[in-house]
Amino acid sequence: MNENLFASFITPTMMGLPIVVTIIMFPSILFPSSERLINNRLHSFQHWLIKLIIKQMMLIHTPKGRTWALMIVSLIMFIGSTNLLGLLPHTFTPTTQLSMNLSMAIPLWAGAVILGFRHKLKNSLAHFLPQGTPISLIPMLIIIETISLFIQPMALAVRLTANITAGHLLMHLIGGATLVLMDISPPTATITFIILLLLTMLEFAVALIQAYVFTLLVSLYLHDNT
Image (tube, rainbow, N blue to C red; front, side, top):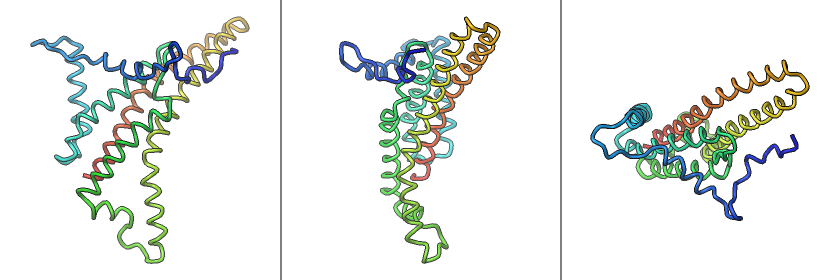
């Protein structure tokens, strides 16, 4: 119990050098490409999952927005696999780092907004001033809408960081309490262990749901600007 509560969120190093880049690249190993004429079950499931994601995400998009299909699929598979790998013991989860999530959210949000101003300038500007707004409220509404626009990538990153970090902290606390209670009160330790198992199952769902929510919001921002 003397271990630092936030030790698992510290960027790991090897011989004084950060290895976070290696950790970020590791999930790509889980999705290998097949050169066989007939795929095995793993590759068949992978192809089915990719087609399902494309169908769900690209359904509302115009042909211009569908050019982002590869980016959207890669994003949700990367975040989902990274979150799931972070649930393994003694592993590091890059998505618990706000800087990591901002580095994903800001370029995607900026690309969607720039695309909107380039191809739909009037519609993009119309979002800053709803139709029928009283003249006296125009300056205030423009300021509010501008702030809300620039908050979008921050909200994306903070939502993902907060949900993944909160789950890991809760599992750490309950796991530590279970170890302490094993010597004090075994029946209570059994109850906390069952709670830990249920929480772990919940965290598996949260890891996938947060990947879906992050990608869905990026897709909606793209839809609004194409």
